[in-house]
Structures are given as C-alpha cells and as structure tokens.
Length: 232
Image 1 (cartoon, rainbow, N blue to C red):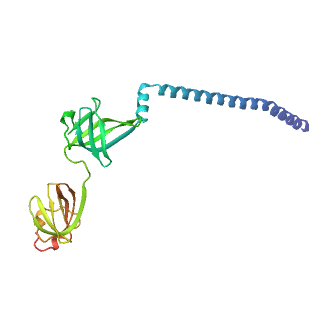
Image 2: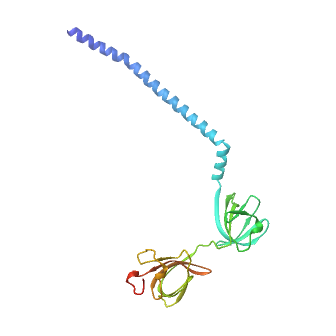
Image 3: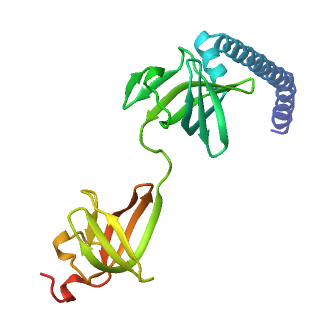
C-alpha cells in the first residue's frame, strides 16, 4: 500500500514536469500568434486608410473640409460685369463675380444684369488662401436686416381694419399696422375675435419696427374680456 502511494506520487511529479515545457511552449505560441495577428491587422488598416485617402471622392470631400466657409449679408452699392460693391456692418466690400457664381432670386436663377443698386444679398462662399470666393448669392429687393422688436402697454384710442392707434403709458399716440397675421388674445393667451378689441381697452402689443413703421404681431388684453363692460 505504501509503495503504491509513493509510486503514484512520483508518477504525478513526473507528469507535472513533463507538462511544464509543453505549457510554456503553448503560451509562447499564443503570444507569437497574437503578435503576428496584431501586426497583420495594423498593416491591413494602414492599407485600407491609404486606399480610402486615394479615392477621388474622398479627396474632394477632404479638400472641401480644409476650406473655410463664409456667409454674410450686404446691400448693393455698385454693380459691374466683374464685381459687386456691397455695404454691411463691417463697411464696404468688393465681391468678385464670374460665371461660376450662382445668382438666385425667389428661387429662380438670374443674371448679373438683373441686379440693382439697393438690392440685399446673402453671399455664401469659401475662403481659400485667405481670399474669399463666392459660390452662391441670394438676392432680395426687401431688407434682410433683423426686425426691431417692440413691446408696448397702453389703451386703444382708435382702430380700423389696417391700423390701431394706442395711447402709451407715456401719453403718446403710437400707430401699429395690422395684417392677417396679427393675433388677438385674451389675457391668458387664448385667441379671440378682433371685434372684442374696442376703444378704451387696455392692451399689451408685441410687434416689430422697420423703416415703414410699426406692425402688431400680438394684441393681448390686460384683463379677462368677460369681466370688461361693453364686450360681447
């Protein structure tokens, strides 16, 4: 019995010793395979990137990304066959024009002969080597400057179909143009009929102002209409 135990112990030690070189060899093989795989994967990625970079379409896109885009608004001061002189908040600027520039007005392509002094332009293009090159120009006869917003409290002193006169808190009569987009609201913002807005009604007017005057976008009562006398 004792001999058998000793034999089994020796046999186990021999088996362990025999297995160790094999395990080391297997680990080395695994590390080597992993290294070869990583190297092959890296080389394949490099080849793919090189192939992609040489694609004409990709080159075009990368070239466009390297160019800075610019867009701005201006008003025409002078027109020639080769250029436009415009004025904007930064001063005067000369824009070169050639047959590569697209001119659009009301979504229709036009020629430089259709431009007039005073027209407003949205000019879009690219800056290449610090020089601006226009690509597309949108033309408008109306001003493109942002509207000045107006908010005013007061009392209605007169109202017609197209105009409302308000006595402001500063005791000044202020006229507002009305149009089909003008909204009439109760004190809580609920849209109501314009017939409920009569003389002596206190209102809040939100609108905008331009060179032609003031226009009302929203006219809202300061108190619930149902509590006001004389309203139906």
